[in-house]
Length: 480
Image 1 (tube, rainbow, N blue to C red):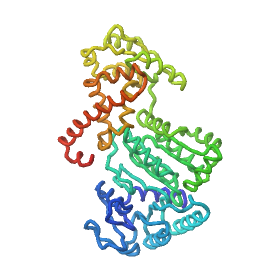
Image 2: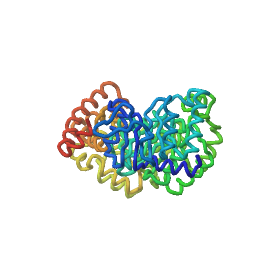
Image 3: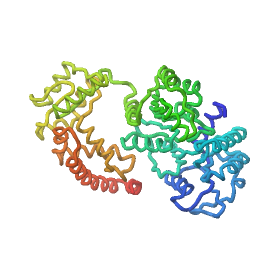
Image 4: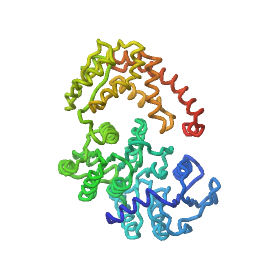
């Protein structure tokens, strides 16, 4: 498939006006049933065709017995079929002039020579017939921005508000994990795409859409092989011109990593050193861990232009201040001193015993009146922003991280996660004030602190979920 037709095929797939689910079943835990449930949950506004050999209707929707009975020109087909039935289904899709097909089934290039031969045959047929293939061996995609969830993973609608990110990964598990991580951080996800073995559409095709059509400000990529290096670099240059950040995690530096990529998606990883040099020239941010992929993407989405004077840190612990200084020095992050005007403003806002510096140590001795005056740190943030700092609180970051990873936000609607985190921190400050002080003193999250945070989270969550139910019954249903 040519670069031009591949890019167009990705666009038609990601924004289909009509969808056919082939191999659909009424069981919600079946692959086809899960795709249908997602589409109904998202209130997909296009035409849905169901194809089932054993059912006349599902959920009040009529079923056709075969792909050959579909009208010509359906935009996208989801093939919820085993590997043995894929080749015949693809041939039928081509006959009905279907635009694109999603193939979930494994058992192709990732299993060895026999699977690669079958996949290559599939790819040649699709290319000749003008059918854009996503997969095989993928989990599909979720286009939150346009309300299209062609995946069997249960997902909930969430219109992107504020800074948004997009995800493209050759690993389905990685695409799913990244999506969950960003949403847990309260960051909007515009699109999350699993490319799988890339028998047809490859990561470059989806990247072309994300650079040109998506509203995402930053794009997170997990790529085991860059199949079209020249085109990838051209798209990276285009992203740079459009002020869209690309963050790339590319396993494959050593021989064993290359072998792993080959067995996972059938990819043949290239030379890492050569790839690294070329991509850095186009301002692609290369990261080494999944954690870095998540954090760097979030930072670039929220702060597309770096603060002029760098970062400011707010803490109530001298111990954390020292820890922060050591860490920032080790990574080369400058912590500039506040200006004279900012120092004067901070002295007016804080008690005389507070250490006016960067990091800013407000100490743990603030009385309730002073805390109320500072509006739980918001006043400090406004003062520090006069110097164009990017402020953050060490203790609150530790608390937020624990909440995001402990299951406290399970069942909280995706569009309410950010609010939950913000209001929970305020709740802890007002009702469990000892927690932040204990974190600062012990410099660790031991079992006792975790139990206290869990107790606070359970108490707050009950009130929070009740407030959502009272304010908007629909949101309560989505949370269940």
